[in-house]
Image (cartoon, rainbow, N blue to C red; front, side, top):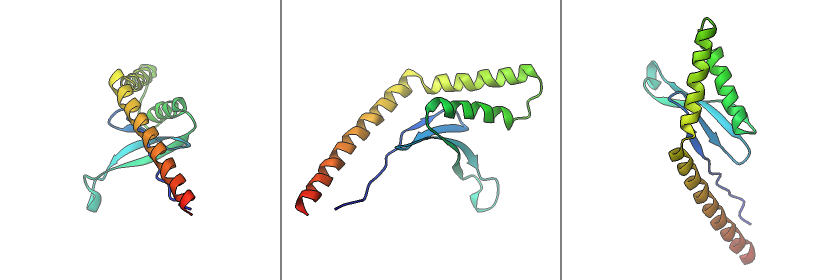
Length: 126
């Protein structure tokens, strides 16, 4: 019996600094990092901020993190930062991104069906 399984993910770019990916169990918030010196200078990587059961939890975590890691002073600066993050979230959920995510989901569903058929053939042959 074949036990190998490829897990596909969806990816949603929120802004230049944050993106959300999914796996079969989680919504994963990631933060962009660019190496500043040495062998990694200029190389972009994505660090995992956290794993969440729902998209809105990941958005809330991104919002809180954006406020906590910044050096904002004053209520107006914090309100502006919150508005900017909310706008990034809304733009990431724009019609074009929704269409792209829908296309990815349909592709994943088709691939999943093909994998099921392959697994059934392997099981029948054994």
